[in-house]
Length: 332
Image: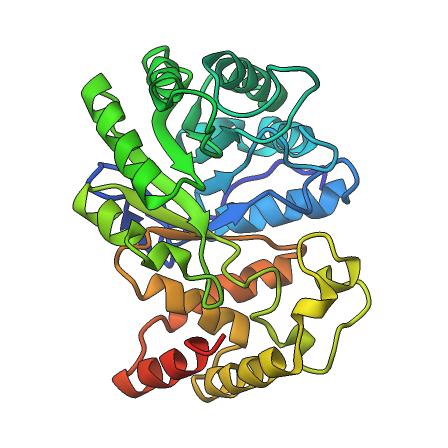
């Protein structure tokens, strides 16, 4: 990995780019998330290979947050180190994002949505990554104890101070989002994007949020498109050791029921008929919706990354396929 990195000259030829809401910004349909696999505990050269392979294939959007690791903060440091070595001359071709909202440091100013926390956190993130600004900065979650005006005024201040180009929100409900959009519009820093969990198994955003974002010209980016690995062929024969369900951090073994496996098997059969893996079909299912700007994928190898990008070869569904899928996922 010691050789000088030169990006692939044809990197923009095959990636699909989608407009983010009504803004001027285009995002790749597949974005790379650094939530897992990019911390100090992970293999540095593997992280570097994944980032190079992503950029070489037209992925320009790299999604981070202050607490990604482990340990918290280390994903930004690792990314910053690779950025300096490989991507310094490509900074203007990249969309680098960060967020603040969850627990990051001790004491009363280390989480939630105060102006103090958001501004301090972004300053730390910029230092860790060795950059002067992020492209998008998010309030990572709604803070019920802080006036929404304060949180949104902090985002407005951050954009106007040049430390972020755009403001976004993440994990806000439909009502909270509507109010946040209104406040930001009044301040003159429109909300660019909303990021939330979305998959065939977790369809909460379909209850009004996606419609409301479209109405307001705000983009939407989905994370956890595979529902922590459930929407893959990994659990069809039980829970393998080393899987997320076996470690029980976010996904509990008791969630993998026989009924769930039966439904996943049906989806898997349909995916194979389409010439896709179940993971690819699950991602394609989200991207078929014009309101979804981009899907964030997490990968632990270049092979996984390539499999995710191959999803883009087939993101349209026949009416019959759509009906079949709805009948299966409506039971989940």
